[in-house]
Length: 278
Picture 1 (cartoon, rainbow, N blue to C red):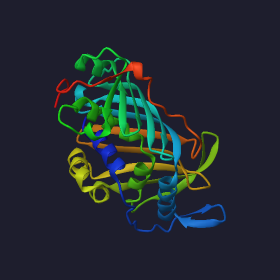
Picture 2: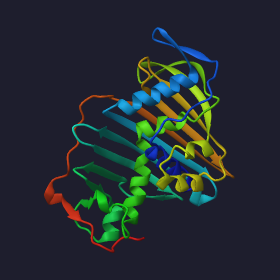
Picture 3: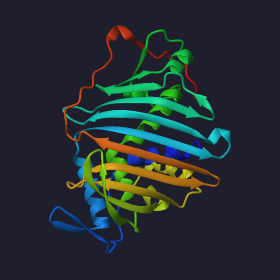
Picture 4: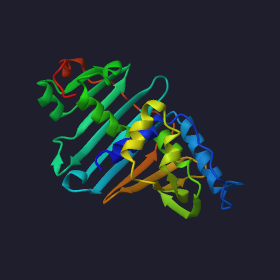
């Protein structure tokens, strides 16, 4: 179960296309246009793809599968794609198997470099400064296991990838209207088959998604989209044998200016080679 949610997140981050859906004869008014629910989800995915900046609050809970399978990750994210790609991710709570990561963790991606702030990582690497600098090209390299784990967890915040997963659904329907964060939205609910969602994933990540969700046939989702089709809230839930996961993501600040800067140079150190596990 510990692998399920990170694998799902990897799939969301790696999606490169929108899947075709079987159209439901369940329509909803969007402005002056009536769309089938499946078409509305497709449109929401397209709108999410075009967003250049946003902020998100995310909570992931896993339960069952023994003590090692239960845990919680909670945090927030700032994202921008222009004028250059940059993210600032804070994981205030990281708990798996009853063990807390003290102080949580934070990662800033800018200028092709990842800066990570983590008490645990500093202890493992013997680092005295608050931040660790790792070139993005080295994140997947041997000896960067702790960095990779953190980045896998952080991918749960991805807006466009998360919504694209939902387009694999063949049973989505509109279930009503609700207010999310003070914004009027239409609520959609459905499931997407894991096997088909896996086909949307970059081949390099497909095996991880299929392995992590090998016993989960379908993933249930709920989407709350506003009048402009922008996704304001997404929930994902699923089960694998006797374990379950629930992911809730709230999105806001679409296309608003964000401030993402690298930490001061005197607070940054380089990660020593060979000091983290494989």
